[in-house]
Image (tube, rainbow, N blue to C red; front, side, top):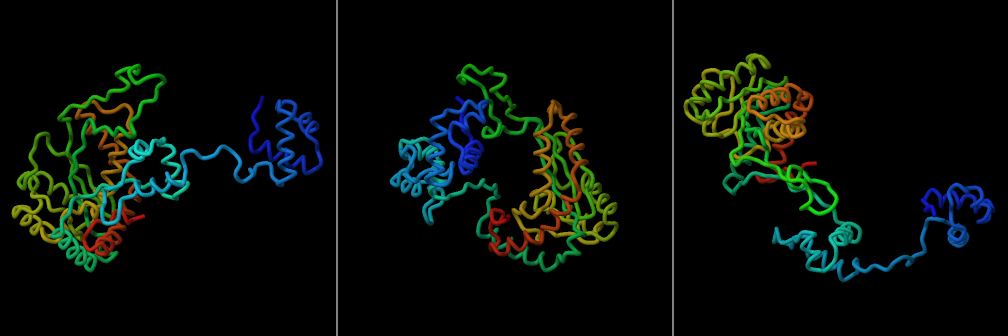
Length: 357
């Protein structure tokens, strides 16, 4: 016997309102193989309530899990208590404690309590002293970097990409029938070397475009000497190609960047640069490469099929991803820096990314 969809019920309601009887309706839709008794029930519902889809209040199976008592307990357990972050329990823990299903806990939270879920936002560790430095330096940069000045800033950074990125067990799931022990090991297991091979890259971006992607030599230690001799000249060439002789060179507070040798080199070869005490410490949330570019590249790399199997193939893949990055998205990220500086100031130098839309 065919089931009645909401569209079927609305069709029956229209015909009933035109005066049709149950037998006539069934004959008109013989191919549907509808039950006469169900059609009569729908007609009675239309006659009494004026709708074929609206159910009578209180009808249906009574709630067994979403009771008032369970709702109250879920409300107390699912959210952290005031001034006690981290005291909330997961839906699985609540289900075990109350003796109900995770689905019931989820429905209580969303339908009965009107709660919403949010993804956790990764953030760097910052203490009170770091907050004060971030607040002071962000205030200074916001005053100095007008919208026009911001377009002349060349943001730089280094990033390590692994041949086998860490596995996210929440997203990399295997669907199969039967039991877990019946799944083929090659489908279920994701092997990863303890010390996965990797490539370190260095690059810079500005409103005018992307610089080149520079690969750090394998097993090289990026100290001040290596940075000054092998990376800085390439990054400054990118600056001149994109911004000519009118640019501001930005770098973070890594030891190779703040070393005296590096600072002296920048004084001699840059029209303007951020000295070691000018960029806010522990602030990947302010560098477009950190909060946008590297993440986009990593997601693109994770979607590659087939995956690179050697460091040489990884270099080729990263270069292709870098070349294909839309420059308008990079420009948008750079223009958002002033907004992020203001957000950091509003947060008194603390975390602010969780407040951004």
